[in-house]
Amino acid sequence: MKRLVLWVPLGAFIVFLAVVAAGLYTPRQEAVPSAMIGQPLPDFTLAPAIAGRPGLSSTELRMGRAHLVNIFASWCIPCRTEAAQLAELTRRGIPVDGIAVRDRPEDLSAFLATYGDPFRAIGADVDRRVQLDIGSAGVPETFVIDGRGIIRHQHIGAITDGDLPAIVAAYQEASR
Amino acid sequence: MRGAPLFALTLVLAAPALADSLLPPARYANVQLADPRQERQAKALMETIRCLVCQGQSIADSNAEMAGDMRSLICERIQAGESPESIRAWLVSRYGEWVTYTPELEPATWPLWAAPLLLLAGGLFLARGRFRRRRKV
Image 1 (cartoon, rainbow over the protein chains, first blue to last red):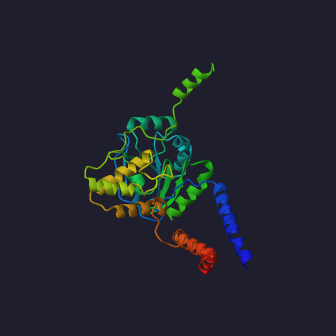
Image 2: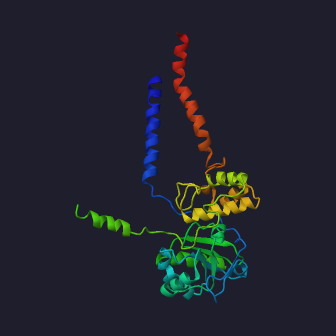
């Protein structure tokens, strides 16, 4: 019995090493999911990010039709790559609204002219208030909002072709 | 050696890939509150909120633009009279327990709180023979 007890510290140390090794070899999980999935959209009213285009408010997103809300910025490099996928989503009849984070109208116009403009409306989130309020931790992120204004799905990072089926499915689920 | 000036030049010319906007930092991103008591409260809260970008740092330490926006938000809400704990609860409701460095006692975190006691008990158990022997002498 006494001899067995002598091995306990070594055993504990090996367990400790195993935990550390497992931690080192598991890929790092960097994405921070929003805790607002399933919650109602917080109230907000964002001024138009570009003159002559509509801004975005939470009331519009509660008027019965599901929407995608794309959080993006002209200074965000990955945001350039998802314009084609967002355009494809609008082609399938899904309304896409934008929230431009910390952006300037002139930069935004240049960005949309270069990479494409799939947005129905774009709200200017100059101080990141709305982004923080819906639990978004970066750009780009895309939220599916149902017709009652409940946040139903969050896609973190740029949308690739492979992501489209999941987003379309989440939108159809939210439209039901 | 001949490559050194060229190397120095590339270092100077290499622009870091910044993931930041072109707008100036938020109002209270790097500015203290005028009221020392409120500033203390804000600082203490910032030190226990995790940065969403530089994920090992608190927002008080992080240089990320988003951390600056969160610092500014905290300052403005404290200035408006909101309590630090209510701001923390608001952040937790947005990003989950992950965002705070002060985990609550709940099923997922109880080992955190129990581990020191369990280790201490285990240590005492292992060392008990030593104490006994010394008493005999």
